[in-house]
Length: 241
Length: 241
Image 1: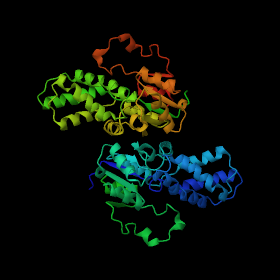
Image 2 (image 1 turned 120 degrees about the vertical axis):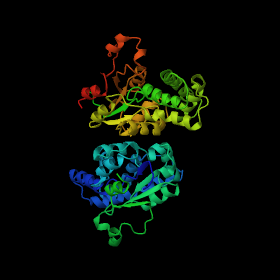
Image 3 (image 1 turned 120 degrees about the horizontal axis):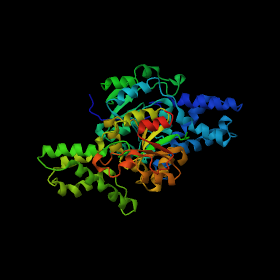
Image 4 (image 1 turned 180 degrees about the vertical axis):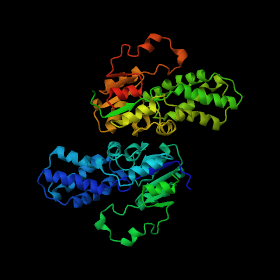
């Protein structure tokens, strides 16, 4: 059994289903405005701008800027392609806060509540504080503390994003377990000495995007992380909760 | 009924009984080391160094420094007076983290759980992140988000301590309710446009320190805050929870 004191969670994809959430909200908005679009293509296009928009900040070319602002800039960039150029400022802002109302995966609330009894549970997301707090209230995700980009001042996978989050909890990196559905996040955390738990989320990009069904069935793949789990309930079980 | 979305809590004195908690831990430590001291005098002396130690930071004469470090400096300052000069570094550090293990007032857990169903609950304390998180786990205080000094970078009652906390939640100051047992904290919050709730904690400085018993019986006094409450359960009731 790992001797960790805190679990630090990636959120988008690992705890919440951003693709379904964004698609649902843009579909409603499109219907109300008589606009025709493919909501899942829209969600994928918006998400595709996510990493590039943080890169200028990671490189130090731009001061730290919260994700709500990056999301709005990215939305304006992709709007023409989805017939959304004429949306009111109010509708644009409402769509930006769709990221504050993402649904958890079916196991998320239960898994978090089980893990919370034994460990400190922190978010370690690139989402800003308001986004993570509003999402937690909306989707019943009982975090102990919101860490991540806005609190720490660095976007993952910068080393400081992980180092300063552990330090804020007054813990050594090896006392902290990074929980994520993404190997790159886990790799970056492990390079700083954190323990790692993989959570399998095969449908993050939709059921029709499964190009490698063998990988989905064999969720362990070639992964060497400290814990490999199928969902947050499975993770709780593996951690003795 | 106030139309607020988030409650921001002062913690020391308002939610937890720091004097009893510190006295209890120093008494154990003294007994184990054969040291004679008055544990409540020690708690009062340590707390008396609290505000002065933040002043240099508030004035900008010293970079932002977390409370755990200030507590340790202040402890070393008062140690000789209480025969604690020869404590080991390990015992000193353990005593510093006594602030992470303060007990809630009898109503705190229940009141917070009731309020949490309707509002975002944030700590807005001068305590650092690890201190507030550890205390929350130890005393079962179910916060939604830890704000306050280390996250915001300013010590109360600096205006920015309040302004930036509301801003981190993406809320206007008038959408946030400052909850505190201290009139100076509420005054500083109200000057920034926050709504205010007073919580009566007559025994913060001990039952023998009640120099004005009339004030204790009439907890409303001359107070003009938006809400005047006897404890957190009473506050929850007044807010319709």
